Amino acid sequence: MMTAYGSNGQPVPLSPATPLAMLGPDIVWLDINQPTRDEEAYAERLTHIDVPTRADLRDIEPSSRLYADEHAIYLTASIICRADSAAPVLTDVAFVLTPSCLVTVRYDDPKSFKLFAAALCKLPGGATTARLTLARLMETIADRSAEILEQAEARGDALLVRIFGENGHEPGHRKPKELENLLVEISAHHRLISKTRGSLATLFRVMTFLQAVEVVKQDREVRDLIKSTARDMQSLSEHANFLSGNITFLLDASLGLINVEQNAIIKIFSIASVVFLPPTLVASIYGMNFKYMPELEWARGYPSSLVLMAISAIIPFLFFRWKGWL
Image (cartoon, rainbow, N blue to C red; front, side, top):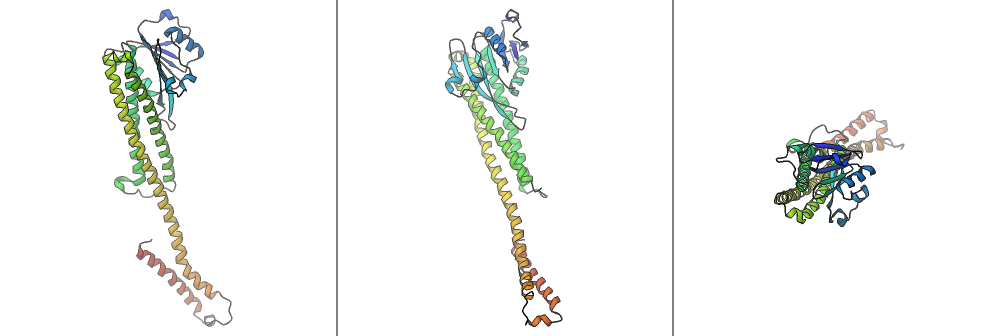
């Protein structure tokens, strides 16, 4: 699917059957989403550049992800996608900056692109150049990353409350599997933050590369906007590192509480075995089959042995209560 956006921000759906002559000269952004081979060929005829393919986007070499030739500047960044779902992923997006048009090639649907497309027509003065369109798009991606980190921070606070309760008081009536379920949620929380960190790292490399490009240096508005966005991305990356450290604490706290609860269960069994050990000893003694035992002919021997077994069980129990082990 291909969509062209003019300087006024109005979208124009395109297809390989659309005559090139019908397109206006003020196209500043061509967004290509999951293109077919015919759509790639059409975009190449329209922009006079080599449109990156899916295989090109998967290349991890920096020299293949950030470079320029005599026709355009080619940038590839990994952007977080499906951040609101249980399985966020990173999708590679190509940004090709030509003198007249910004071309983006992607194979997923990051929310930041929808937000930018909706806000493009509301930008003060519109997006008059491809360079400004790219700078504004990067700013929107940074804003979306900040929103994701804000939601992740709130989610981390909610997990902390579920682990320790309000004001540090452990919640009562904890279900047996609740802490185990929390571990699964913490792993999903970690995945979201790690994906965001990875995205910000590639985006910051793109912004650093752009600041060294001559056409960007010559445009003061674009240069200042890119520099400001790069600083925002750097601060967001530091904040993501802080949230990642909090995840370690959440994980250690959950595992510690699981160990405490397991130890409490083992302690109950240990105390129970100690409490019932003296009665068992008494019963074992009187269960011997020796012929000459003075209590065997005693009329009150049976109730007396029961009382002795009860006392021998109560004394250890009271001792454990006194020590605070129960």
